[in-house]
Length: 106
Length: 106
DNA sequence: ATTTTGTGAAACCGAATGGTTTCATATATA
DNA sequence: TATATATGAAACCATTCGGTTTCACAAAAT
Image (cartoon, rainbow over all chains, first blue to last red):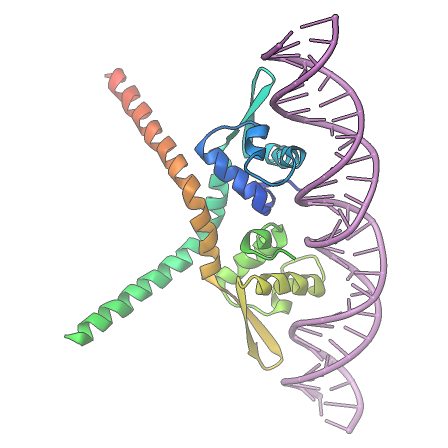
């Protein structure tokens, strides 16, 4: 069973859950209210997110608060690094093009 | 059939393919040489990548060069934005902590 | 003490996924 | 022209995925 951050964010519901948890820690019931699926479906998503350690559980009585483990999100950013260079180059070129347009206008 | 960039990068082979294409455009056979799977399996991955428009085909005789469509990768970066704020805050706090440590040392 | 509430887990299901093997087709090459 | 090469697509298969329904259990409320 592959379980990494990339597989975790492949599902739109899980991405939405992560978006919610970016704002504040929440309980499964609290999260489920934001979706049309059952609480159990959300629970399964939380299990996956927990397994790849992008969320952490905090027990508080019979409630469980899930909160985002931001470090895992940075792994995505790190992977993007190799591509970021490319689109920055494109921007540089765009800058040159714009500079030339400006120059020729005068 | 869901087909978006997040689903595209969920598979490790597809991520590796994108990594290769970040360096240069390549043919299916050229790409397949880098993996242990069959050429046909790579072809299926390329189909998926093409469907969500993160790669583009360029026909050249009987060869097809696949090249990266960097714009799609930026969508991931854009989604990360909401989380980037968070880990930057952490860094700021870390800076404060480090500054305090330094101060107390004197 | 009994009932309600919050939660995870298991059983089940249809659909999607990733892979292989086989085939079809178009373009080079001999 | 006959053969080799580059490629996509279809058929098939075991596994995974995302969802629901049902159940188990601990903690809070009555």
